[in-house]
Image 1 (cartoon, each protein chain N blue to C red):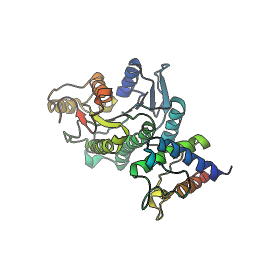
Image 2: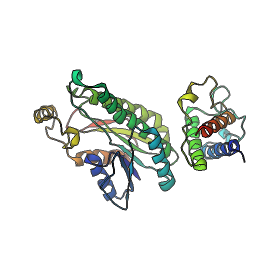
Image 3: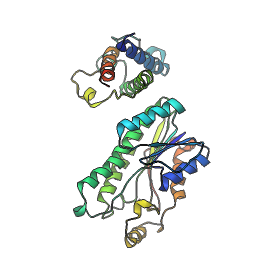
Image 4: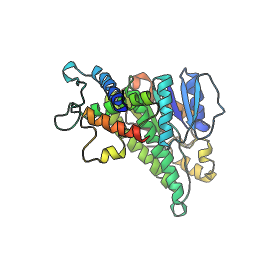
Length: 229
Length: 99
């Protein structure tokens, strides 16, 4: 059973369909309803940073499905802007969704996993963090927090057979980079070892690796795509 | 049964589950005065965290809404509500009554 955040569109939507296709019972969530329907998919409308609503959702998962094997913390927002032009409201919104949201889901998922046989948590980082991208200060900083969270939770949850890792995608053609000028994207791609946009399948491939049973000895790792390190 | 008794039973039920994973000599007795954490405590931090989580789940099942036992107030109290089974049950009762 897998829980994926931010499944209304983009990578999250792709992952929901992908893991249903692989035989998972998938629970997804986003602020708005999802158009995706499947017998093996259930959608919750929830803001990932709303602790009370997130806890209620986990209560329902526990009651109905009794377990959680995989959490994919995909939900995230970005804002490309020079720091001098970034309103504080934007900073708060990014930190709330990316950091607070991921934290709450990790904590609640671990509570559910520790009463079962353990589990797998996959967080979302970004190449913007190691590349120190200008114009992405807040987004990259929020993902730097995710990296540290991933590495420390990996240690805290290890005794419960829960692994915590992160995938760091390159730009993928989604709404997240919709407002980024084409030249900026090209400039970024030139800094990758393999200079192309990522595909949804590139991201799914890394998640597949993290969640497979044989990866029980892999935890606290941040795996960047495109040859970024 | 009073609300407090129901909550104590939830904590005992959580303790049953915790005890299942402990070696026989480390299992905790189901009594309010049993010290959980700190001086003469029977649990390490991992054991306490597990008991808190299991207790939250049992209380949610019993009362139908989630509670966060390890909240900011609990963490800032001079006398930890997690000191004994009884103090923990008392603290959860307070939280449930405030709902």
